[in-house]
Length: 264
Image 1 (tube, one colour):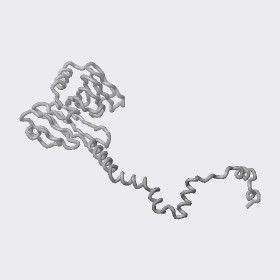
Image 2 (image 1 turned 90 degrees about the horizontal axis):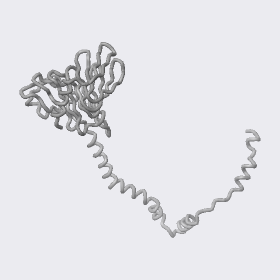
Image 3 (image 1 turned 90 degrees about the vertical axis):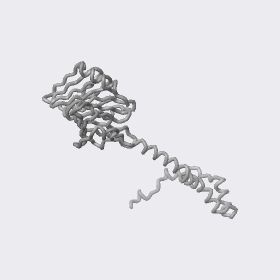
Image 4 (image 1 turned 180 degrees about the horizontal axis):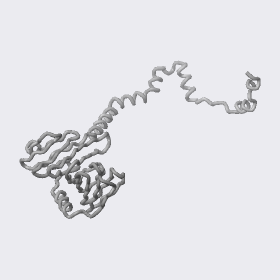
């Protein structure tokens, strides 16, 4: 080791020597003197030092555990996944759920399984929904796949894929904003509180809005468009063509009828 490295720093040493010596706490010195003289039991001193910790342990084992349990119940109670249900089927009609026929009599109050594929009835409209959230009416022969998911402490996510036909939708009083996604071969539609229709047929998709706003993403071009009240948007799978126009009189009448007769 070099001589310079072993040599003390005279300036630093001087600064250290000039510092005021620490002054002990008189109360601390007195407590230590009594402990040494046997005037305070060591066990009593230990009890005094650890009393706050023991109090916290008691709080955790009693009221603390009760509060934690109540919080857990609240969290899990709000994390249930809402289920799609069958609400209306034409009397005497039959529709398909995952390829299996279900009669109108058996469909009353039926809860659909996860990712259920539903094909409408030839005798009239079939109505599906989630209580107070959304209602979906299927025109005769229309096929949709409906799903619902929810993560802990998150709003439910609802989806429907319209493969062929027409589906009219109405959102309810408890509908979580922008929670419903509707897909077709040409479009991805994001629904916020509104009355709408999705018409899927072959190479085209038509999105109709009576009131509110719907966001539509064209799967071909990636372009995102907004469809506002009393408007409809046509997407063509043959190319990037897209047409936004006033709502047709027929769809306007059908959407008003669906909205006015929907009861949550």
